[in-house]
Amino acid sequence: MSKNDCEGMKDAKIAHTGASCARFSLILLIVFVVSLAGACALKGERSGIPAEIQTVIDGVSDDISQERYEKIYNEASDLWKHDSTVEQSTDAFKSLRMKLGKVESRTPRSITEKHNSDGPLKGHAFIITYQTKFERGDGMETFTLVEQNGHWLLARYLATSTALQ
Image 1: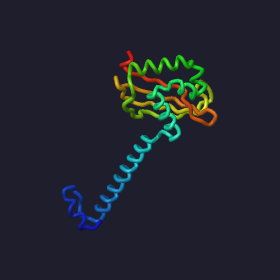
Image 2: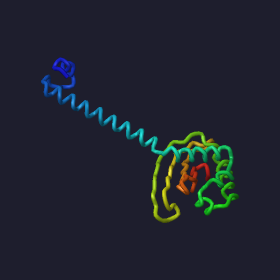
Image 3: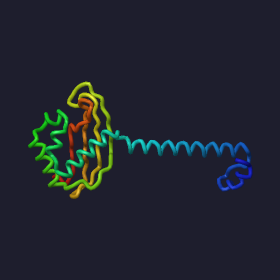
Image 4: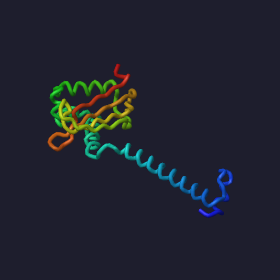
């Protein structure tokens, strides 16, 4: 930045010396880098769901919207099948559908990756929570996926909303 370039900075109370111009340029560079880093961090946060996990969630979401509840059960993890029967699972999805309606939109709120050595979620798991707008109210959805035999499978699904009360 030349001394002439600094002439326009009188309003910013910057002195017209080469050192002040250099300092001002350095400050601008730092602000730019920090802003760029912040933008990249936000982008990473939004796209923090691995593609293979997103594919499973999209598939389950499509199955829910198409009322393919038995398919969800049959393709779910052993943990899901241990916790409910196909009838219980189907009844729960039907009840949610009746009370909340279809999903209109969802926004990721938290993404948690876990590596557990014991407990019900033993092994590699992802827990993704969404702020969700349903036809009949707002709520939250939580998808828990576990890696089983090299594939990501639904282990748990939870929908909460005041419209369910």
